[in-house]
Amino acid sequence: MNLEKIKQALEKPPALDLEENKLKFYVLVYAKQPTFATFVGKFDLKNGPVPRAGMTHAEFLKQVTPKELYATSGGISPMEALQAAVTNMLAQEIIKRGLHDIMDAKSQHEIQAIRDRIDRELAALAGKG
Image (tube, rainbow, N blue to C red; front, side, top):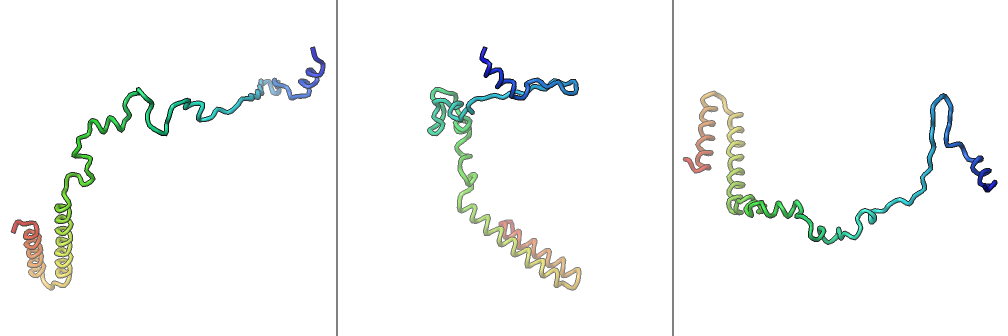
């Protein structure tokens, strides 16, 4: 046995400590930290899925989702969206003007007449009157 190795081992703190009737173990591990490439291997993650593998979730959804649901408008044409926006704007104006008139009304009879006018104007806007 080499006497120098024994001296060096005795200079290090003990691996087993018997204080307070408890065993304490100290271990030092020397190893290279694995890189991401170690786990990935030769798979080309930049250019797509692994060859000859199962389909991805996106491919499955593309296959089973009806094409009508891909449109961003949800099946509403641009003209229909414009008509809805204009109708909404006009309805808000009718209601705002009516509420302003109700605040200026002096009797319950005037308030009821304004409410009836609002109802008629909204019905006409909706094409029911």
